[in-house]
Image 1 (spheres, rainbow, N blue to C red):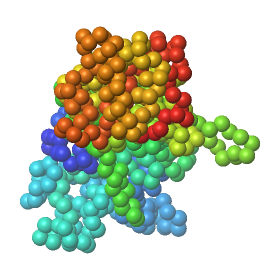
Image 2: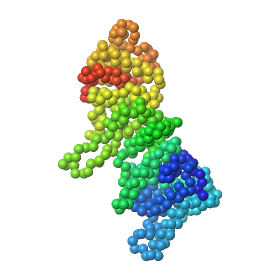
Image 3: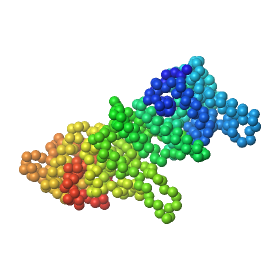
Length: 499
């Protein structure tokens, strides 16, 4: 009988269990029962031996997998009825050992390294000890003959029958992206199930369509890997918001892009707590509208077909550049702020990149201090005191611009790139602001100046341009009506030097 299933912490095993839960319509791994495992095993046995899955899944299990080996295929040409029966019997033999050992009494003396359950009692390969898996069962392991990196030089890893079935199901809960599979794992069991559910639904639909059309290839995702990952996470968050199922903690998300074929490979993409926390927050009502607009304006632009262009163009964009750049955070926070929040264009990008056409002048309505305030607190871990000082400085400079400094000051502050010129401009403006206020207040005191722009008391911060841009964002938001009547106050794209 099947043992109770629990989250293991291993990405491939957990994604496999999550796929089984999604297939069975269960929300928790612990709710999986023998009937659920049987349904999963039946689907695998019926469909892995057929196209398009038979060829597609070799990238997960190699061509030595039980369902892919030509020697076990009773439908290959030239076989006599006796050989067909023999091939069918061999395939059934190995299918039972990969898919249904959980139904047998636990008799192994070894323990599964991942679940803590007894290892499967029967062999999975003619070269491995009973209950041990190799590369044809678990991606990225070594071959059955290799003794390196295994305990005591014994090839293979002992694994419970339930985990073996999970590994068999795992590719169905992955997304096909290019020449590999994308498995998404989280420290939150429900989130792992949610990702597996979405990828499973797409795969089952594509398999059914391909089989009905007699096609041998499974289509891949139209999205790039990073865009697909963030887009799917956003869909999950939106559904949770609709169901009012807020998470009690911020999950981490790690994606594994792998290929277990002739040229094995593994790339790992990690979304740390501050990024997932930010994404959870921007889908709340306070930020949702402005965030969705920024996302919408970050999709790759589809090129207009021309007479010379005979190759069919994609019907939907492959990249969302904002989504892609989330993976550069927090290291590239300054560039992210300048591009997406201040709307500074990047002319050096490809012609299908919408960031070429960003414009603070035309898109001042997209410049939002509340969203930026959330970003610097969640992603950059900026203290509340420092954020408050940035906001205060932005408010004072907006007031000064409106009633005293005008277009000339605004353009200078916007475009200054040399540190010495920046410090000179700040000092001069502080004097002018004090005069404007008739000595009742200054632009900033020494403590605020040191906090925002200095390392210690003598060295200007290396990220002073970022601090300037954050202040600018607050100024633009406060001056929207003034900018509407003084559009030329904002420098043209050609005048703005990209940081």
